Each structure stands twice: as C-alpha cells, then as structure tokens.
Amino acid sequence: MKLVAGNWKMFKGTSETLAFFDAFEAPAGVEVVVCPPFTSLSLAAGRGVPVYAQNVHWAVEGAFTGEISAQMLLELGVEGAVVGHSERRQYFGETDETVRKRCEAALEAGLRVIACVGETESEREAGETGAVLRRQVAAIPPHEALVIAYEPVWAIGTGKTATPELAQQAHESIKELHPTRVLYGGSVKPENAVELLAQPAIDGALVGGASLEPGSFGAICRAALA
Picture (cartoon, rainbow, N blue to C red):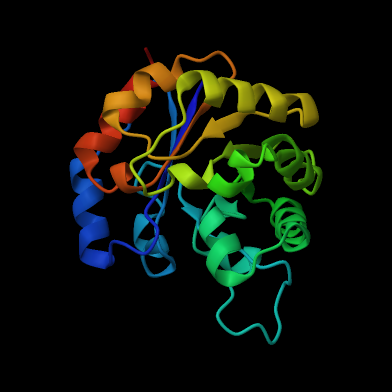
C-alpha cells in the first residue's frame, strides 16, 4: 500500500485545519497522513487521518527553547514526525547528525518517522547526487516504523519536478542503501502524481503545497491507487 503524506508547512491555523478535515476524506486502499503545524496538531489528531508533526527533538525534556519532544507529541495523539526536511536543513541548521538523533529518539519513543533526503540543484549539476544521498541515508537508522522521503531540493516549491525516470533512479539508489519504503517529494501535483507514483520504486509521496486543498490532496491520494 502506498503512503501519501501532506506536509502543510507553516500554513493552516485552527479554523483552517477544522475546515480541511470537514472537506477531506481519505480514500480506501492508500495510507494517508497529514503533517499540520504544531498549533493545529491537537485539533487534527483523532479525525480519522493519522497526524504527524513536522519536527521532533531528541531529548525527552530540557532547556531547548522552541523544540518539542516525542513524548509531548504522543500525549497529543500524534503518531509520527517528519525529520530532516530540506527546509530544516537549509534554514535552521539541521545536519545529518541531528537528523540521526531525532530519528532515533522518535522511533524509540514509539513515533513513526518520515526521514527526508535530497540534493540541491548545484549538487546535481556537479554530479554529486549519489554522494549526497549516500551520506544522508547513512545517518538514518533502519527501523520498521521509518520511511525515507526523497525530495530533490531544486524541485521543492519551485514548480520543477524530477522526471519519473530521474525519480525512479534516485529511489532505486536509496533502496540499495536502506531497506525501507521511499516516498517522492518535490512539487507533486494532481497533474503529475499518476506518472510519478506508477514508478515501481516509488512507494508514495510527500506532498507540500498541493496538500493544502482537500480537493488536490484527495486527487493525489487517489492517484496512488492507479
């Protein structure tokens, strides 16, 4: 069964979250999760769709201003967390080592994890994609409750999308390094979802902007059934 995760990023407060769930119904036959901002997690939990946080800290508690522990998320009814998203790496200093620590702590606490990897445009142009993926994947612990999301950074929020062939190749490379499901993330839309999700090594999608509207997110979820 394919997994489709909607990453809302820093969008949707409480009223918009409620409106989304009033309008959205996950189709049968596909695993669907949504990743709201922290302020909407408690409202989203328990509405029929598993809820993941967009980040999680490695400590149980402590002087870590602005961070959230796995135990705090579990108390809200949150089932998993995204770790190492490219925006966390680019804007907030996330490293392979902190990704590893966050993954290990979340998994040990009982959360599921979507761990993100991917190359920048300059790394791809320099022929470094393979080396980048090997380095990033090596930091991710194998675990039955973990999946990897391949998100080419040059395709996130840019409207650019890796061709199905490029995505398939990257997913095959990741699976040679790590025994897990691999999702594709990077400007996934209803218009390209069917072709991307038809690739044999692509086990689902991590969807950004297109997950904000119930109609477009539902269409991508249905594309996973094709």
